[in-house]
Length: 131
Image (tube, rainbow, N blue to C red; front, side, top):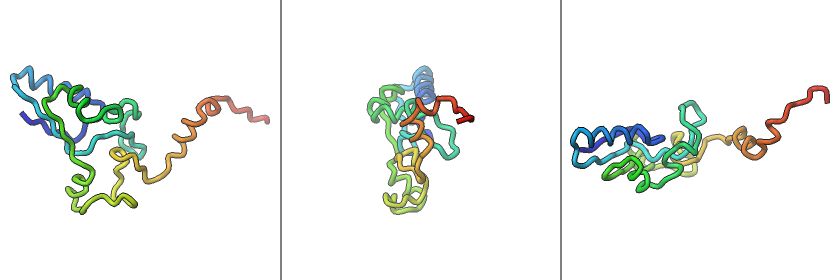
């Protein structure tokens, strides 16, 4: 059987679906994903977990395949995704679409996130309004 999904985020749903197919008697389960690996969080409105919880942020394709227990696993490439929407390929200098969750190239700087990572201790200190 070949399963097709739009994405793999944490991998837990993919694992469950593969297990269900095997329990139903599938001799082989091949998994295809209609997007590149989601390796970066979205800060523009899509509810994605923090990066450390994204399967593709922690694993390459083969370990991901092992994690979801599929016989094979393949993703659409970033250029393949652009071709699917009528573009020749992705313009690396000026991407035509936001693809940050796949590439890590955010269209704007993530100032708040950068400040939190660099200065987490200072950001947690109470502010004295009298000084």
